[in-house]
Image (cartoon, rainbow, N blue to C red):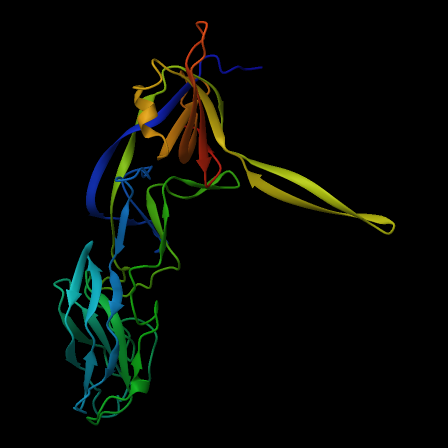
Length: 336
């Protein structure tokens, strides 16, 4: 048997800020990681995620003046290296193949400097979907973004047709707004499936950039600094419970199960119940770290909205706070 007589509970008492920085591709081109294991969700410290990509505008249309091999690009906004960038409307000239190599793809991009630019592929007798291949879309510079492609199958100069313009998100266009944030490690069936302090794109990014790399993803964030809850007891992690219900039918019973996530909780013994530092964090989203044995490295992590109900008893009893942690996800256990 074991007890938690020697336990320790910590709360997110501060934050260490990191300015907008490039995240690292984990290798699956879907999850991009930071140097921090945890990201704070406290107001004023929550992460700001800015993958390179288009935000608004940037619609490509055939040239309004019917000039051969020219397309119009509407004004747009995008993120470049974590900076919101506005790019004015403009025109781009596309390329065509020569002789029998009639198929050519031109990538329409915004450079890392915030300018419109056309990048020509290599002509071929047939189209390819392989980046950098003859007849395929070209690799674009690292740090730039792709907003569309023009695919032509004639070597003769002509007005670009609408049917030759492609702007499918994820295939011909890089967006900046399709992701989810992992504030802490994601544990599935007891195995960490996503690193904490990371961003997961909704689908794997194409390797569209020079060197067969994905586009860049940037974020600013704060990592929590933990402080001991000096007088605490009765910690309960946020965990999933299950229940069963049944319906009687003729000659049988039909059963079904449901799951619910309970609140985390603990009791905190206060000094004066007014100026205690932890009380200033009421209603904030915070991280809590619980060690069932303060001499060991294993701990439980919980993140959620911090609530308190204070009690000021008479007759010499201690001032206390019944604390709750309203979590969106169950607490997770870690060996170290």
